[in-house]
Image (tube, rainbow, N blue to C red; front, top):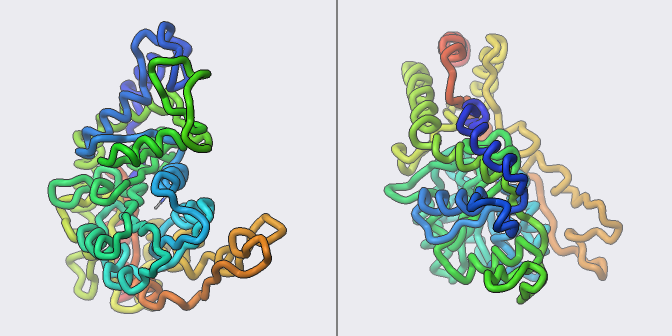
Length: 401
Ligand SMILES: Cc1ncc(COP(=O)(O)O)c(C=O)c1O
């Protein structure tokens, strides 16, 4: 999964290119920067990679979600549907926008179930955020169609699936907007950072303005004289991050994806030898970015027993069902409506009336699927780990199946 594994000479060269000109800001300093615009170049190359017209670099994947919601005009009074298996950032961004997250079930893709999504659409639904979890696709075409039947735009949270595809198209390019994260454990990393992509000129302009205090980025005047249509915030990416992103993006297809895919293939082959193990449903296996290998045991008890043996061998898998940051039932701060604000916002209106509430047992299908799932994170370089993992898998299968 992590692009940091292969940070090398290319990243160093890009960073020094910035430092030698002493321009860290993405805008202005035109003479001093001698034509070097790392963030802008990163945006252009990323848009080309994804096959879309526009890309806007931002300070994180969480910021990308918030900027995308602002571009769509989502706010108080609106509902946004997402899934109960995702990183907390997805619904934090919805709450931060002032809207209310509505959680839908996942299916065996580990991503949003299109049928359950459609059943939860109401007249208040203003956006849908499917999450391409753990490196691979949601049933994105079905999700976009289901939302489209109700006139609801889709934001694809592609934080965990940079480089993933469905058919010929990049994940993130199916909905009105797509968002990415380049944080320190992501496939392409800039330390912290994110990207918003879209084909829609007006959504791009709104996102670009919102992420930079409302600046309209009029090239004919200096920054101090630029105008604004609405208020904004600061979610800008800086040149050092743009420099890292460029070097990393150029390694995505030639180095990162092939390395991960080969390691995943080897481990999957080891698991396939054992009857009773099944695998995550991949709508397009060829477009899997292969950052994770997810498999199912017949029962929750067997999954836990299997993982105990893996852990004893020093090769424990991720059991998302018990993970505190990625699964609805473990988000006690959300379920108990905990907020730093005395008035209770965003769970309560300023007049004290409840705005939303969440029940731990609301997503039984998600709970059942995750209870049987184990996940092996895939790295780009795993030469030393592979034999240990394969031996651990064989021992675990002997004990748990
Ligand atoms: C699904 C998902 N969405 C959003 C984010 C937020 O990204 P960032 O850490 O860059 O804010 C993450 C980060 O892990 C994520 O996994």
